[in-house]
Image 1: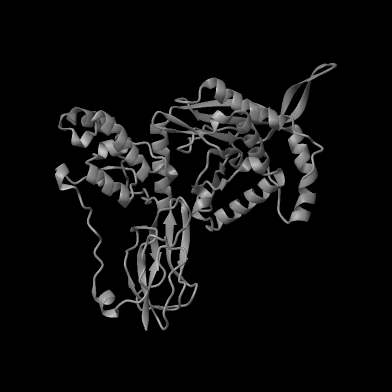
Image 2: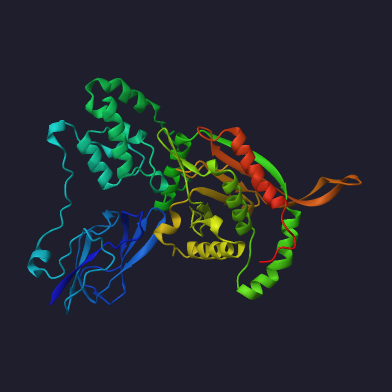
Length: 445
């Protein structure tokens, strides 16, 4: 008889932690190989953690809603045979699979306290006053370095959903040490802290009458709300519009959609076409494919396009098509359909919602003709495509101008005016429109 330590498995190169949503199994329950033990969430992707061994769950080491680091032991399973180490566990995490039963079962789980450097003489930080999410590692670093909550809130996060990462904190420390300006360590910075604190917006208090229904936000809606507010606080939003004649594009899709569905067993929508046009425009104007790190502009090598997708719950998720410029239209169509289907089934992997460098959102799906989308940080631009409507339009011909019924749509590009000026923003959305208007009606797929 031995005990197996179940660890939080590695879920992608950029995923360092996850939140425990629900324990599917409870202590005393029997578990089969590959049977789900718990459900976890990383940013906006929910997934299950299966057991690599069969046996009985004897101990869980974390509670629901706890944030756990990848590689941490999360449960203990009693097995009949010697268990093997989970292959996805990080190499630096040492796991002993055979342990003394009495030691594991009798020792209560006590979270490790955050250790602060006594030489800094810093007070404990009250993170409850912040609307942003910080990982345990970031909190620990902030406490050790004496970074105030106001200063931490001012750091622009480069992680997923704009989260502050370890590297962001290290760069903040380095930049401020060079000028001797870390807020919490400088006793004369009270006025600076107060100024930052006063800039924080105060939410108005809503009155509730007897007939009103109070609905608590779910986890995903809270993440979306925080991300949207953070984006508006971070970027100077500007939106440019252009109207596009997509008549040839509509005729082409009407011609090929039936044969494509019969051949491939799935539909071809307008989304892959829009993504292809965006990828081409980014290659022409690569300075739209950037992010900001303080005063540094990071020009992205890869073109990874996120597509905002509505879920049955009413929430949004943004799966990412990696290296979209390297895929042909057929490949983009396959990727779009696959990601959209698995998004609706909550089967996306964490890495499939990260690493985006530009985002496309289709407001036309809801019958809207245009929109002013909020930038998906840390990106600097997002394109909204409106509904395609038949409208009378003036057409220039060799015999003169005529009025004809055309398929028209609006494109609207929101961009960060700190680094993208009107010339680049306007040129980019116009370039996307040109690719759509000049569509080859005889093209094969």
